[in-house]
Image 1 (cartoon, helix red, strand yellow):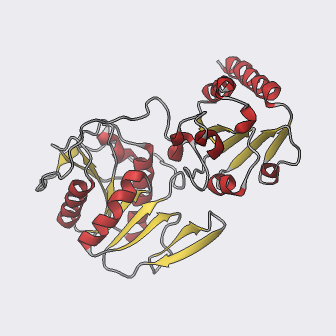
Image 2 (image 1 turned 135 degrees about the vertical axis):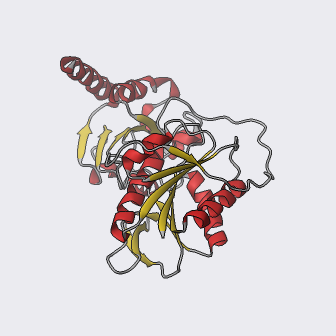
Image 3 (image 1 turned 45 degrees about the vertical axis):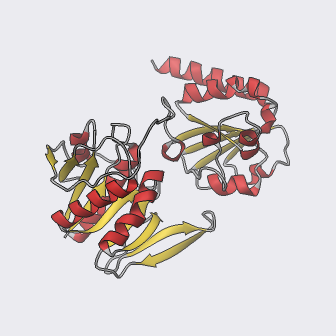
Length: 318
């Protein structure tokens, strides 16, 4: 019996969401009295550091250069069988979601996605948020083998161990049925599902040419930028920045909403943020009801002042 965690490294580096999955796997293994084993596929720079977050063993399958969910699922299933894993853990990322179902079928396992809790003592009951985070559902897995994905920003990575040597895993790598001809990725920013700090803006910005003040604030904070759906729909900002029920659901530590009224569809995707700050000149904006802190004022005056105050504060710390 073991806990196998897939540690995603599609860009060649271990992702934060992978470390969250390992942190969960470590706690689950401790609860069940077993070992947490991490698996990387392809290039995985810094894979030995996964041991710091609770993996007692780190395995790597080399020779895979591009992502194919069928190939990856077969590799994960083979490794799970080799190490005797009865539970396989994924991050609830686009990659994890594409793999979890396939692996569950291969292992004849029960599956729960976007888990937000460790199992209750004596059972394998886990929680997940439903109805856009307004409710909690309890799922019990009674199958011999289990597959779960971990909701992002729920289990923070904690250093609990030390580096471990990466071992090679020997598996049969099936031929890929997909040929990747080109790959375009967004570089230089933390992906929204993984971001702890998010600065978002809406149509109150009046036009894409004014987005510099949002980017300036995000840069000072070290935050990821986001936007409301209307802004993405009219192409002021790229669609990968759209947060909300119909976009990317996030739950950062801090969410700053600038010039966003707070329609229910937007709130549904951000209402799990730990702290919400709203800046809007309309005191009746619905977003203020969900905010922890609110500033009623002209964003073109307020935001630059906040940015400058943060710059001075950070300069004083150096």
